[in-house]
Image (cartoon, rainbow, N blue to C red; front, side, top):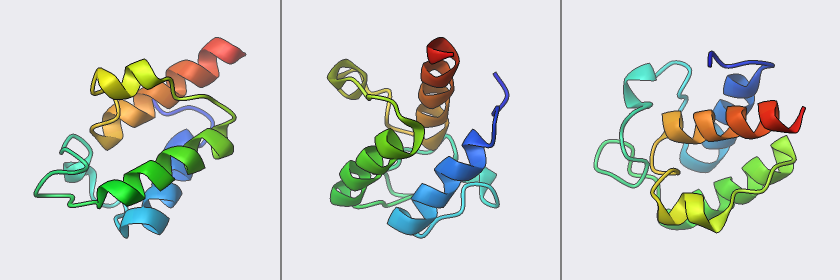
Length: 89
């Protein structure tokens, strides 16, 4: 799926606020681990970002997605949001 309804821009804004990284401009970081050596987002800020994402997009990020490692990269989070938004329409 290719970033529908401004989701990519809205998600990038959240990460700019929480991690200071613009994933629109820094596409090379989209598949890097958010808590890894290249992005280096503090785990606390990732938790806050997940709350922001739920509020912004009106979705619930289920615990199983976190346990299964589906919130480890920007790209994975973007896909999760798009799937949730499309399935709710």
